[in-house]
View 1: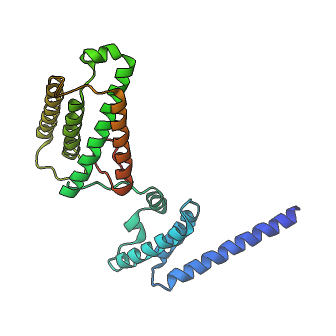
View 2: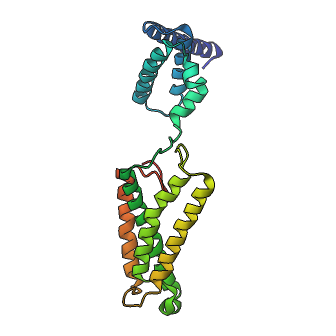
Length: 244
């Protein structure tokens, strides 16, 4: 392609871009937005178009922002005052910051506790199965925890994990100061230790050491449960917690 043809092509692209921007300005102007807010939306729309956000989602975002800006405009708040700079808004749109979970509700506690019980079952079951296979002689001498110990320890640790997490969760108005909450966390840990070592001292008839295959099966079933819960619920506290 010659230099003249290339210049003509670039000029055509620029003209198309300018024409598109003009139409966008006119579109926003009809909605009653101020010039400053229109400039913000136009630049945001251009920047958002450079991201991997789907076109349909981009349209929905712009419409939602337009509604919010119009409402804020009546209170004398500009788009920049509402969202920050265009760059900041694009970043927060593409990678929205995780919101604090807030106060623990009964329903959320039950979900998080159940999820964490399953995780501890996975960890203990696979760990002791591996120990049995690596050192079967030591396992037979009491080096591996029995099934009662594994289950009860997992339950205590699981139901306690959301409580411990909530003690230091951001965005929550805590009833006690940091020192008291730290003491409460240590107390919960001590309770778990007592359950763990206490159940492991039970007679073999009450706390049998099961085959490592049984441990693997329990761990695998618990893993299925964890994967199911992560697809169905939003886990907010505990082991590997995160939004689905």
